[in-house]
Image 1 (cartoon, each protein chain N blue to C red):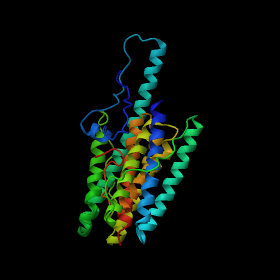
Image 2: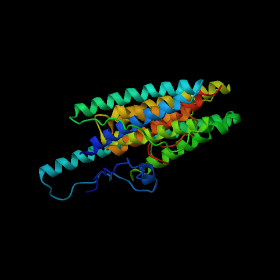
Image 3: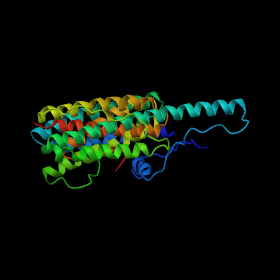
Length: 177
Length: 136
């Protein structure tokens, strides 16, 4: 069955979801057409399963778009205010890692997703960092909301973890003068 | 026992350990660190109580805390207390990531807890991580 969801626990600390997905192993199959002549029950189950996978892929896509935009915003901020480059380095690394793992979840391509927005970076360093902090916070809230809608428990955990990482960025930026 | 209940029990055990460790850390801290420890203690205690309530509602008997816990290293310096606090936040984050995955009912609670552990971890001087609770 393509969509068997692994229920391996990460309690022991050994099985790391991120590591698993970085390794290129996707845990939920792509939505595929039903086998020939299935019974109505099987057909309904397949339809429901495919709908659930599509819904999860949509949540993944939304996260990819948001993380790409944050990455671009970080890079634009670092270009405009070179003194922020070092502070923003772990933030940029975080967003890159988020995009990479999210893209690896399903074979469904993410290249067709909407392009990044080109918001202007304020000329004042403090305002630029405050803008970035608000953008990160909006993404934290969005991922937490999407986490509740995820069908697969492992996608929910990944979205919650990404929210937690972006919340760390908010704290990091809030600590700046 | 289902994976969901296992994750709930594990989260409770983690909060018991965190409360013990914060008791030690708080006793050895002063100034901003003591305030940070006290505030974190209150949040962990609230989550412990919530987990006890969830387990009870599920018909489970919540475990009591251990009498004492082995600390992973000696708290001979102030930096060691901060490191211990960061470590236990990281461990709790992992338990809440597991709970998010296993329990649809506790998901909202666990996701908020994961976010709080990750940001508290940072305020103890730990570096940001791309995937808090899931390992690097």
